Every structure is written in C-alpha cells, then in structure tokens.
Image (cartoon, rainbow, N blue to C red):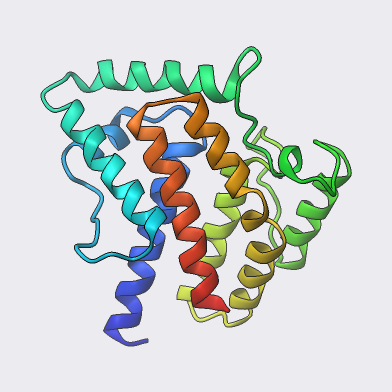
Length: 207
C-alpha cells in the first residue's frame, strides 16, 4: 500500500470514528475535549457539499464553546441527544427501518440488515443493546469493513458497496431532514451532514 493510500484510509477511519463517537450515544468528555482542541483534521479543499457544511457546523460548535468547561458542554450535548434521539417521544428515530417504506419498523427490515452483516462475516457484538438498524450500529459495521480493506481484504470493498447502496444510503436524506428540523445544535448538525457527505464520498470511492 502506498503512502497516499495509507493516508486516505487513515482519513476515512478518522471520519467514521468521529461519526460513531458523535451519533452512537451521548458523547464522552474525552471526545468533546479533542474536538474543542481541534482534534479532528478537516480538509482545506472542498470535498462535497455535505462534508463542507458539516465541517462548517463543527467549526461553529468549537467557536461557540471556546473557553467553556468541557463537562458543561458534555452535559448540554447529552441533554440534547436525549431530547432528540431518545425521548420520551423523540422527534428523530435513528433507525433504517423507520425511514424505509419497503420494510417494517424494527420488524422484517431488521432481518435484512442482519443478513447484510452476516454475508460479510460480521455480527452485532453481544455487548451492544441497540437494534441492528440503528445508525450507530451501521457505522460500527462500516468501520469494520474499512479496517478490513486497510488490512488488504479486497472482498470488503464489495461488501461496503452493497451495504451502502442497499442500506445506509437509502434513508439518510429523511434522517438528516428530521435532525435539521429537530435541533439547532451545531454539534449534531455537523454530525449528520458529515455522515451523508461521508457516505456519498465512500459510494464514489467503491463504485
């Protein structure tokens, strides 16, 4: 693998790590502190509209919270995460099958997502209580595929292509729209725009 290829894998994995940390659960203090200290490298050049918008929101988040106590920032983000994604009666359901018209919410669609994982030799770890179609779980699977590609497993490229085309890319537009309507918190606006932009970038890469 060339240095350029290694750098690209490192950048892709850094982004998917960021997305897992931002969207899987309430953010941890160490993660928030890294962001506030400029811990996520953002490119100087434009990549696509969603990634550009996401990075702008991320810079806004950092500027708005400059000098604040990290624990206070974490507490605010945890409250907003709970309100938007957990509830009671959350305005956003971060599940693939909630948004797809061709599957039932948390029913038959889950078997299809699980089958996609199984075909790639991956299963949801027993330590995870979330459903297979939860956005954070789908991101964990994507990270697994990227790590396997980096290690030289060419078959993982095909698994990623199918998963993005048949699953993760199919519901992001509606999910992003709901998040944008539900919150004005730059941290979460950054995350959902980066998510959609990252998936678009990955689809072009593995097409």
